[in-house]
Length: 105
Length: 122
Image (cartoon, each protein chain N blue to C red):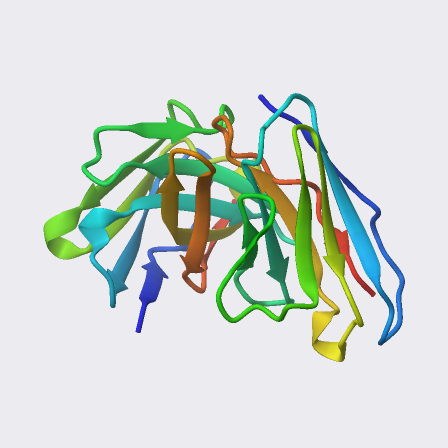
């Protein structure tokens, strides 16, 4: 199985900050990497697919980059509603493993 | 409006069985892969299984293979997860998700249900 190492966790930040979260895959996954946001008691929400494809309705302060084994989610100018847990997920091979999650606090 | 509604969760004894359902509306169910993801209390997300549009391809995480079976009924717009031989480690909220599939960039789950809680305990 492909292992995904996500860091940091937790991540302390303030409103207005720019933050980055990284995911490293145990082998090349090309760009088969998604990012999700999850708030307590709710289902995950897809933010970015294919490493950098911002989903419709997701604010442009979110961006994704990377290819191969190293990927980054960046959030510019943090807003209060961005404090949540973020997960990356590889879909290059099944099982489509998730990273451990990054709680942004 | 796209909607996914899971049901069938509850309290079950170790070794028992449970069948989860996911009824969808607002999109053409037969056109999409579907995925089950679970989340143990206070833990992260775990991909469990997925199924192709016509049910011809299914995949499972190793920890459930041989115990869980994913299926679908396109006529009823419904996805199922039959869970047998349940153990405490299967206690989790189970989500179903509509899944986009692209040859060049893989899969992504763009709509999720609210989840159904499965508790395995004596």
